[in-house]
Image 1 (tube, rainbow, N blue to C red):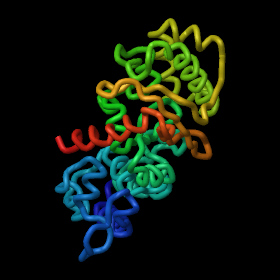
Image 2 (tube, rainbow, N blue to C red):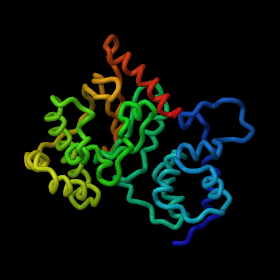
Image 3 (cartoon, helix red, strand yellow):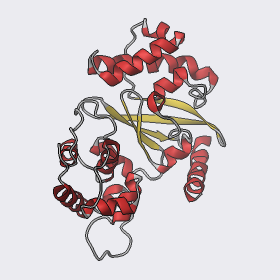
Length: 282
């Protein structure tokens, strides 16, 4: 498929101009001379250079990669149908909608944009992290340090040396059981032929005797919320309540971490906000 630079540029510019800063969790600030987001704001949200965003809108850019299109789709808060359009204009076949990889469900992303005072993140049903707010990045400072299958929380848990640092040792047995049970439920929803799910499960079966033993039990579970104890490298153990919001097909979920009033975790999360500001300033 050939890239249609003119139509792609027009679509991206119009989608950018249709968004308000408040739609993506940014302050509206002073009056703007032009409608919508600025190019530098889209670049910030997508994790790419302002120059490249400008070249795309000016029909001067080379064909964007699938990874880059996914980042732009998240930055512009595109729905799945809207996301498919720029993929085709860029000369790519859109990914399948079911378990659609890096594309964050727009409803979850809109909620995440508005959660500025509590840690929150979006993960898919295989444990892959898709989006975090500033406080979640401070709560889980290693969350973006992994690649490949290790981007899955489940894969890290069983096969990565640092995968279990986030929970106290006495909670490890429980976490192992529920993570396997949730993965079993996800494989059932996706079907045994789903390539991403099978690759993850096959790697875990090959590399972890603990996983193999739990997998053979055939436990199935879907968590809707629970209390957790998170180990932070600077603040120690933080006791939080984790509320989970699923999308309709259970392919993605939003995790929101809050502290019970009157507990030490309230002050710890306030300190987390300070740590997060220092991290982003540095």
